[in-house]
Length: 468
Image 1 (cartoon, rainbow, N blue to C red):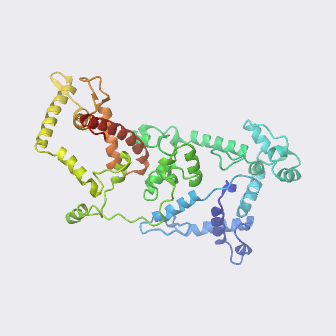
Image 2 (tube, rainbow, N blue to C red):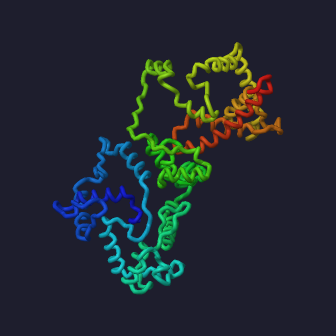
Image 3 (spheres, rainbow, N blue to C red):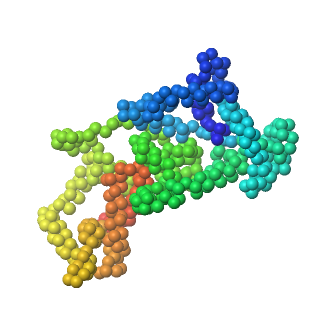
């Protein structure tokens, strides 16, 4: 992977190496990109780094100029900036003469170790994995003078070493989903290695069961192709570990291994760009949450809606594609709020609601009870009664949705289907606290809200002379 290092990675590595060199070393004065590390220097700095780390307990190790907090952890803001910078920095492609000079010692030592171990040649490896063997250096890499230099060194293509052959093989042409452009042989090796690692990992095979992980844990680590990351799992880690720096819908979280401008291009091609945000999250530290712990504080917050705005307004506005007068502070919506309040809380309304719930509770208990023994009946009181009574009230009194039931088999939706719609919308608006779950909640809530709004509009239009 050395050839794929970004320019920022190369610069960082050079600075890290120079800090460990002996004072007065000639490499300290060389500019970035021209510093070649010798084998002796590599051994020296590796031993120095090892000795330095052994003097410090592991829980006090630091990196990248970061300092630990009092609790031993690192600052979230500083960690987030490193990760966001990594997403912004574009990687280089595979190819001959593309490995940074600072990695030269590592490459030379790799070649020498392969010779010491008696590693097979490139063509022998290709034969082993079922690929066609190269017949000439030009077939292996026709770019520039690469084939000529390799011929001068190895004489015949069958003599080409595996390490050199892999690193200098002709790169693939850039295409959809192929930015690193490795050679064909190394890409085949990487994929084969990934498959073997997965199949040989007990945590991804024999131990990956609901019995070991619980049903919730098993479902939580299952791949979901509709999670906004097209099945990617790394976004879940970013959303949960650093939620203040990775807002819902950000391409920095959903596709952290692709630079945002390129990701925007492909999402636009797929007509999905409107579902994502492409701007880098703010660089400033997140303001800490201040808890309100007194009755006077709570009263002050509730009495100042222009200063302390509701957190739910954005989600609600998304569902109705515009203003949501129940939550906003727009003076133009005062009459609308009063109209809805008067319609729901008119004189005698509470008595009517109590009567409705009392009668429907009795009816549902009787309807959903089943014999569980001699002279004994049982009912799932939560699922079949408590949860669905409000659904009946919403459908019959507010939305005008004809429910499908034993008594009305020609209805549109069952009470459990409407319950799923309403609870999903409620969860999205009021208890959407996990950024990793925002995407499926948002997608499903948007679909369900559209269904409910259409029924409510039709109900209102049918009951009045003016269109909605």
